[in-house]
Amino acid sequence: MNDSSWGAPPQAGYWEPTDRGPARGAAPAGPAYDAQHAQQTRPMPIVPDVPEHGGDQDDDRGAARLSGPLFRDGTPRPGPYGPPRTDLYDAPQPRPHDMPQAPPSGAVPQNPEPMPDAPQPAPPQKKSAGRDLGAAIGVGVGLGVVIVASLFIVKAVFVGVIAVAVVVGLWELTRRLQERKGIKAPLVPLAVGGAAMVVAGYVRGPEAAWVAMALTALAVLVWRMTEPPENYLKDVTAGVFAAFYVPFLATFVALMLTADDGPFRVLTFLLLTVVSDTGAYAVGWRFGRKKLAPRISPGKTREGLLGAVAFAMAAGALCLEFLIDGGSWWQGLLLGLAVAASATLGDLGESMIKRDLGIKDMGSLLPGHGGIMDRLDSLLPTAPVVWLLLVIFVGTS
Image (tube, rainbow, N blue to C red; front, side, top):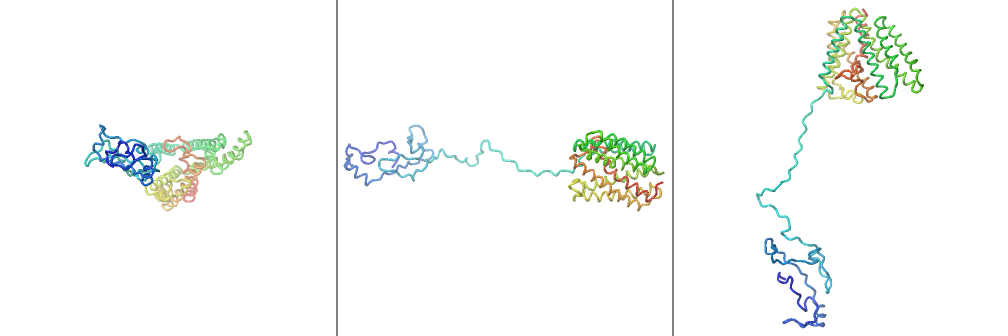
């Protein structure tokens, strides 16, 4: 078949039966002939010639258009001579000019889609101290000036500083217990008894401090009786713990002050504790790899503990040699080792309390430091250790 047959009427006797008679030069026509010829002849499928792209068929002017169900859905219509073959045109074939054409060589595509940028490696992050270091240093220097001035000018003023720090620390602790755990430790008997404990220790010695501690615990028990009995045991237990943890341990600082070289003993205690914390921070921040107690305080490392020990021992040897009458450098080494251990344990102890309460700081009174209790965490358990070792090394006077 060529293109000239598209659209021509079917010839009689070949495509369908007719009663017009045979065409010129054709076989006889008629019903008998049609029946006989239909049994011997199968219809030839019509396969269109696909024109090449760019020929006359692409032009709409005078071009033959193919239509019918054969070119709409690819499903041929059955004819009178049986179902035609469909394996030659199962689906409509796209015309070549309808298919996407590749751009010519060297052509620049219009509006090219931007390629995604390759992921860049993240820059290494610097270690952070986790606090405002400038504010922390400023507040620390200011507190140091107040403490040293009151310590060497009038001892009684320094005792007052201790008492104020105790009262503020008790307020922070009891407030946090009530906010996070619903524990109502009575603040009034704790504050009065705590201040009295510090003054009694400075004026009358260790025995008076023990008596003040016992009276403070009794006052907590009685004060809590004015409220309903629910949670009584929990509240008074927290109150007695607070009385021992804050004012009683702070009383040993006042006891150190009663000696003739009391200001230098207190200064040694403060210097060793601060140097221990500083050494732990500096070495741990720079070289820390192995965690010391990750479930309690993830920031502390074993390398930091070694730094605390080294710094505190060096500072202890210098302090005992030059500040304490009758002291020796080797005693300072032992004192520095003990201070590093007690300061670290004190810090971990308060970290346990804060983790149980679900807080980061006990307060926000001191910018860069948190609250008063966040600064007393290492000092409180270290005070009785330094007091006892100094009594053993050089005596009470």
